[in-house]
Amino acid sequence: MAVLLLFWSQICYAASDASLSLPRTIQLPEVYCGEIIPYTIEGRNTSAETIEISKIKTSCGCTSAELKNKIIPAGNAFSIKGEMNTNQRLGDLKKSVRVYEKDRRSPYFIQLVGKTKSFPREHLPIEGKNMFVGQCAVCHVNQGVNMMGQQLYLADCAMCHGIFREGISAKPLSLEKMNAFDIPSLHKQISSGVNIHNHAFAEEEGGPLKEKQILSLVKTLRHKTVKRSTLSTVTGQSLYLNLCSSCHGSRKTGPIGPELGVQKMKKMSREKIISILTEGLPGTVMSSFHSDKKGVLTKGEIEMLSDYLQGRLTSRRRSP
Ligand code: HEC
Ligand code: HEC
Ligand code: HEC
Image 1 (cartoon, helix red, strand yellow):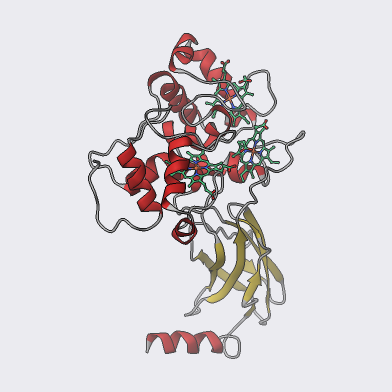
Image 2 (image 1 turned 90 degrees about the vertical axis):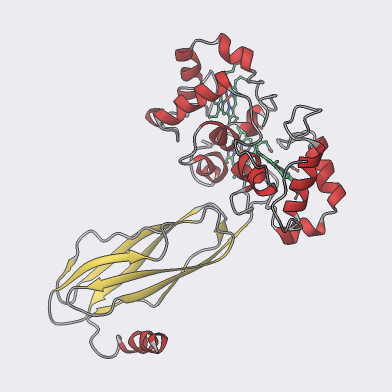
């Protein structure tokens, strides 16, 4: 019944008491998963009176919606502007914006419809570009938002300095070396950049990180190496969230590392996954996770992770 009523009110508002003319659907452009899509909803007050818009709500924390002036004189046009953050939303997008007119029972619904695709594996051309803006931010900024310490390191720093700080395109950041720096100079290396392009991570310098995030990195770099998990019961999922999600995504949609959805992982053999986790993919960020190499996982844990990725772990298992 409720569904019927809702449906009824939706098809009827345009015909009966609607004072605002608003589109039903906004088609968003297709983007890479993780990009931010700006949108505008154009509306008009088609009634003979001034209308007040009391509030605007969106169906998702990922979507913002703003209207500067909420008082709309008769006949006037207005535009609602917002952004949809597609981080971790791979595939079809369907969100809604509800516009509430003062003293009118039901809101106006506007559907935002779109689609995201995975980043191709080849790196975008870097030449002279700032990695903190535009599409570059999808991997070099957005994955680290609100993260601290080790997770932040994996999301923002590991692509150049290595998952286990072993160094890849940039120098290793070993514990000894980090402790040889005094705290202010280590802080400065991260916040203001070394003598290189693109390394000023502090907000005041145009970078993405807040002061407390930089302090958490200083602390992590000086005191800890990458740990497997802080939980007492180690499961495939807890290992994934701790060690892999900053790059492969909390929903396994990437984008720093490729998408690792169950369907895709089932097409890869168990041996292949175990070998990637044990040997790493040389020449890439994807290091070996085996404790015999530079990693932190036992053979049993690597097997457990690979079963988890292939959706074969039905019950929580203890680490062997
Ligand atoms: C899809 C995720 C992704 C996007 C988007 C991305 N990067 Fe990267 N970036 C990486 C990864 C992963 C690495 C580690 C090296 C590799 O795998 O190619 C990296 C490495 C780098 C490096 C260091 C390696 C080197 O060759 O010097 C720079 C500099 C860089 N990126 C800048 C940028 C800039 C500038 C952009 C935008 C034009 C960008 N990145 C967009 C994921 C990304
Ligand atoms: C795009 C690649 C890239 C990213 C991402 C990156 N760095 Fe660097 N970093 C470098 C390069 C290049 C240097 C210069 C020294 C070298 O060639 O390794 C450097 C130098 C440093 C140094 C000084 C090391 C030394 O021995 O003098 C520290 C500390 C450091 N980075 C920390 C970080 C932290 C923390 C992050 C994450 C917030 C980060 N870096 C992200 C490329 C990167
Ligand atoms: C610092 C970022 C980073 C972390 C952390 C990371 N990976 Fe990766 N991973 C990558 C990148 C980048 C690639 C692609 C390398 C390439 O082929 O260029 C990759 C590739 C893979 C692949 C191969 C996928 C394919 O489609 O070929 C698997 C499987 C994988 N990672 C699993 C994991 C697991 C499990 C963890 C956690 C234990 C993990 N990764 C942690 C960045 C990361």
